[in-house]
Length: 566
Image 1 (cartoon, rainbow, N blue to C red):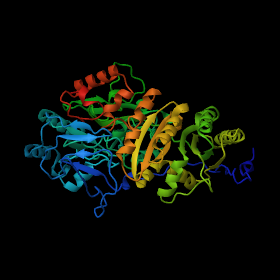
Image 2 (image 1 turned 45 degrees about the vertical axis):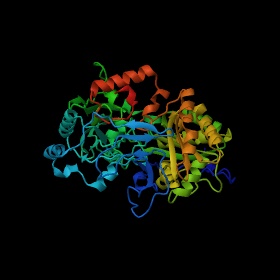
Image 3 (image 1 turned 90 degrees about the horizontal axis):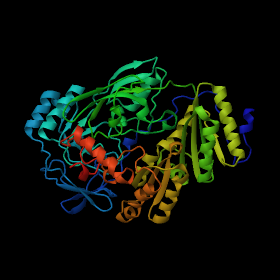
């Protein structure tokens, strides 16, 4: 097959020729944390008032409000927070009365073991640490601790447990469900100073590192040694591996390399009482007893604090190609996925989709983004990445697949990246959507797992429910049935939220899906877990929480309903 065959003459069929050089390290790294929404509403003592933005916009008032409303005191005021309200029905969350309040003796102890510079009480720094990336949740912690070693984490937790001081583990603070910030006045334990690579085995590809290592730094470290991380996220410039493991982050490579439950070989965690649990194995096979590391992968820091990780990394392959394709309908996207699995097989490394509304959002709010398939927008877009070791073989497989898909009517238009800049531009559209949604205004975000054939039905039903109240934006990891459902509006509105919840959870449960595919439950969905798990399963989870953290001090109010663990 000659390459000229891909230079179709029709304006509607412009699938460009494959690149002549292999691509590597294709994805751009948008630092999503640099974009901040215009604001949120802060509810205090029964009144609502606009306050100024938390970060970087001190001269602007908020122009929107969050659907998650807070009740409590601002930083610097006398502690007196007793309850907060979240969600459409103003679910009341009460501060656990058995938790102690921070005092001067506590501060002195922490300074003694960590040094003064690692005990942070500066209000500006605390303001950032108390606020999640989405600016939907804000705690009122008066103390941020920066341990540098496992031993220091152990000393902190042992002391806090003895005092019944609640704590919240924190890394890059890029979570989307309120799991990495305080709810009330919990002490923040940030592990970002624990950022050393401990060892790397070039034969096995096994990396051992501390929890505070930034994902992008690990990607660069491995790239220089001919390996890659099995995990890739849009927030890789800020997120940390400890948080990735604690939330069982999914991301863009899960289709090829699987979840962290399969790639993490071992970990070290500190329990609530300060005991260090050493499970930092580097063996791929170990059938001795219960594999306890899996309790900490995805438990969102509610059972203990992950301090070290051992992870299996695959070798970096030399031949990478990226195609960006247009489909006329969602059924074509499904069929294209099936054909890709059959015909691309072992070289298929990513299969992402986005709808017309997503593309319109990217074009409006992402700097430098242009329509890859002008002049008009298409109903659906699919991004396919292949990764292999034989350039000519991979090219032939991709060519044959694309030609077959075009002849079968599954593709209406498309391009294949010819160089690393084109590939990065295509990936930026997909990875930049969370940033675009923040810039667009209020954003109701839902991370769902659903059967692929039913996945877009929810989107269509949501559009019918909302009509002109808001814009429904859908994209995600179609290869693993993960829908990112977003409802975008100029400002937060209880009328909009009432149309979304609990419908979105009920629909997902009815169709045997999961209300959290990869973001976790955090605070946002802690009381919604029964939509995805049976009462027996949740009761067992609560029993494990009580066993490992009897005082409930580690990341309280998250993951599980409070009524089940008090």
